[in-house]
Image 1: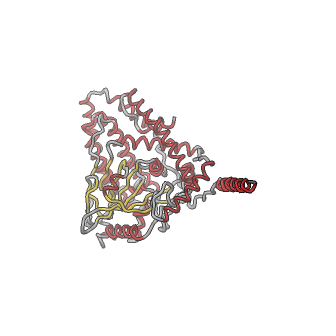
Image 2: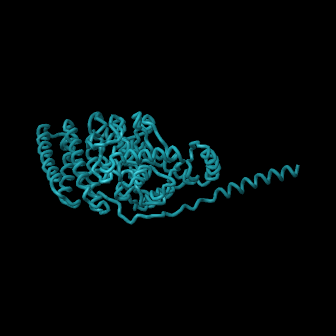
Image 3: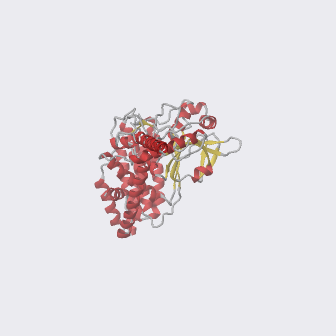
Length: 485
């Protein structure tokens, strides 16, 4: 009996000792590469307030007077745009500021007179093409180039979507065709858009971490994921090569890509006039075939460190950049930087070590790439804005010193579960804790998701209350305030 008790006590003691050992926290690796830039800040709250006030005034304005104002405004924009197209301009030329201000000033009137909506969207596409063409001669490592592109491409997208969100019914063509860019590679159709082998699809996922990736940047954006398109020359069947946190690099069918929750995506294509493309117009297809072959013939884990210089593991941006680099083209002319200390701390808690890297949103500003088309889910555009506003509010908290914590007493249990997941990963199984993610990171990720979901629910209620009380949808700057209160 005494021996039995001794064995029992010994077993209990061993379990307690193991539990205590498993309680020892990880020592996260410090950032390997830090950014020394400054995050872009609009610092235009007064202007956003004026635009909202103008919108409220326009709602009671004589419709014919508003139409006259808009007709005059579009003519002014046409003159400015024509000047941009003709002249040789540096990124700090004052005309770009005029273009931005005039475009924003049109938005409150277009939001009321919705029959001008398509004209406004087409104007944005024309400006985007013109500015992208001008950027071909700019130094993309210069901050003035980056800021001008961001203010116009991202800023004007924000203005167009404010217009869309103020319509009585969110009915609009989800596909916005931008620039017809020739390609000699095989093609297929995706979401009603013709895509070619070698095209890059930047998208925004509908998950909490997607919001952090898209907004956690010196230039907060709309996109969180990159996929490389491959189209089979014989069958015309498209495949998407992409890296997922859950399973590393994988190949998706068009149907699987559509089913994976998307709030938006944009089609980017290598310009056909680039010297390497003139020599070999099939280069994008060769890059896509290389990526497809890599995904089929070797297991490529997800790169949580976001080190685009190391191809042994790949995060989503690396899939495209690695394939193109192998064929002599370095996409992301200007690297992405993450300088905000709060974002650095939170991303470091998720295992990120490199803060000079390649972020999905920044691919839009690469002058080597043309924007072919953009697609937005009309049913979830509002959700997209709320997610971003919630993330911006959380980033403010992160920058004020708020950390991602977790329940340390759960760590031993999750570590045991992680060991199980690791074993199953070796047999090719996709488990709840992915390969490369530690138990501590898994707990912090869960804490982040719960925190995000709680704030998102509160913000959704506040947005709906605002809409019912005021009779219009709160603009984005108001959403951030509602989320941050």
